[in-house]
Image 1: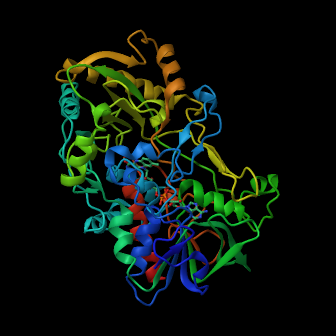
Image 2 (image 1 turned 120 degrees about the horizontal axis):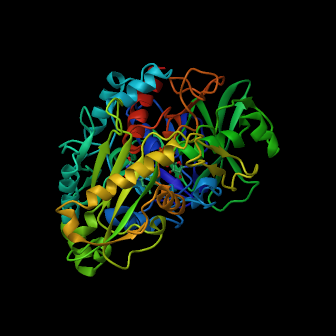
Image 3 (image 1 turned 30 degrees about the horizontal axis):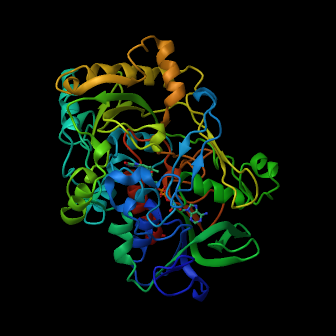
Length: 534
Ligand SMILES: Cc1cc2nc3c(=O)[nH]c(=O)nc-3n(C[C@H](O)[C@H](O)[C@H](O)COP(=O)(O)OP(=O)(O)OC[C@H]3O[C@@H](n4cnc5c(N)ncnc54)[C@H](O)[C@@H]3O)c2cc1C
């Protein structure tokens, strides 16, 4: 059943029956869709899923190439970071989905889980049960229907040229960027079906909506977690458009599971008085349970790169046409099926590293102004991504009002040794070497940004400061572990409280040398097992 402020069916939000559910889940994003679906396979378990956004059929969520059109719409939380000191004081655009499907309903669909060594590093960092051998079955299980991993249907000629050019500088070709060693250059597999986005909302949640033991309420903003005597009793929420006094309560007899994402989960914990004392007291929130790690350790994949003007080739800049829309609508084919990030290279900057630390993402269109500007000329983007950032930041309350967005401060490029910036400079030079190779070079007209005149480290550093942007992978703000600053234990239970788990990208202890969506699916698959076994 789905009901809510923006109901899918005729039921109105106020008609929603107030009863006690076994499990209350907050957030119907990547993790929330997976876990709601898996838990309700057991008909004896009743589950309530609360989601702040609507269930939407908006075309931009279906057409792969259109995802950036969702930025700064009501389906995006519309955040920016606080001014980033090392990025010329810029407030970096920070999209995250606010709808059923969450960020997976607006992401670039790139399915890249990283290297097996990434997960062995999780286990070694105090997360027993999360080594590669432990997590690999959960990745495999997700592929069994709910989370397809397919080839691009109509990849762009420029993406093929990139894959050849990268080999010309010595990056070996790999068939499988999710293989036992993900290093190399290759084509990115995507979560699509017949040329349309096919994410967790379609693969996991939709089939589960028929089950009588699942209730989904959309337009429901969770505003606090109720704690009594060290045990979590339920979640307070406001329905879409209702005022401050109209808080509903969703009691949980077993567990509350936070799946509100790497920004939403620490925000909700802090609003509820669970977090670092000084953060809570600074905005007048009573301390219910002091937990120093909540909202700390924010890490993200920062991206920079080259924007290159092309000639003699039609890029995705002209993809939006009636002909292409028909081709997409009727046959699920053509340039609109592109996820933009069609090809990638994963590189170790030192041979002794256990996993790649630098990524190049090839995009057959100019990705300008952090994705907010639609391209007006032909070109491509070769993004350089810092996979293992040393800089980390915070998510903290700006006020005790749940309608106020939290302060997001990733503190990009602030590591004291400057290794993060150094790595991106290295990546920019590597990207230039790739672009200079045949067959990619034959399409190049000129380097638009940073531009051929930018050659010294100072020039390139100025480019980093002026144009770095997020690759949208915030994580670790409710880090899993066994040390005093960990927020959840390796069974994903909030330390020191009963009846509360966190299951989303916020528990990731260290970013994988891949992207974050499939790892989050894996975390939720494992969490469903843990909850069922408890
Ligand atoms: C533009 C973009 C492109 C990306 N591209 C890729 C990619 O190509 N490949 C990849 O692997 N990863 C990609 N990612 C990252 C990936 O999608 C995320 O890491 C993943 O979706 C995180 O899942 P999550 O469950 O932690 O959070 P989310 O999917 O963000 O889900 C959180 C949900 O909780 C809801 N919520 C939050 N607070 C509340 C509240 N108080 N009350 C009720 N509901 C609430 C939100 O509305 C949302 O639906 C991208 C992300 C973005 C934004």
